[in-house]
Length: 101
Image 1 (cartoon, rainbow, N blue to C red):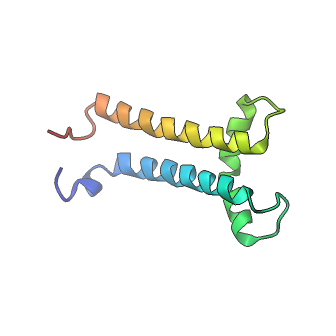
Image 2 (cartoon, rainbow, N blue to C red):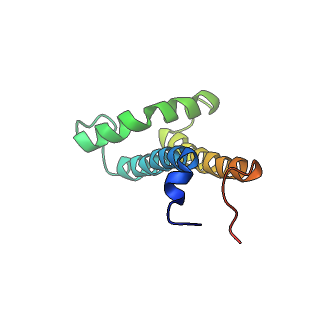
């Protein structure tokens, strides 16, 4: 891979970065949820909730309703991880990324 590969393959790196940011923010919400009350007015907690609520809503739609919120959050982390793996596999399959030799 050359030094300009970040710019050359922006169409892969941009969605991968967004998915990674969501995944790690959701993991941060899990860890922060251990020490912060769910109705806290802490601005960091509200930021984590606001950013990850769309992912939690999507995962919550297919997760049993009686599952604890932390379980839904952890499933969200796992699903985002596998979505990133699927994205990488799809780009490699279609030859849109350079192969490491």
